[in-house]
Length: 96
Image (cartoon, rainbow, N blue to C red):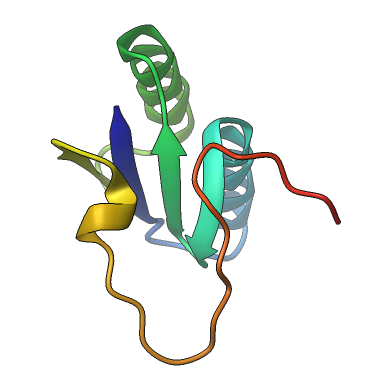
């Protein structure tokens, strides 16, 4: 399934900066960064559950926010892009 993961870490200094870095590292394992705190992911239900558990372990639920959007079809069909192009296909390998 395709999902869009967005997060907002309340404090980006001190402990918040550490949480922000750890949440980004978790998301980078599972998907492609499309904005600073936004990732597109193509995951099986088991991998989605694993990713969400890892993210929940890293955030402070009293201050931080994570929102996951699930798409019924491919995320590419739901996406409209304007401005600078950073085109990368979800789930495909990258050569850098």
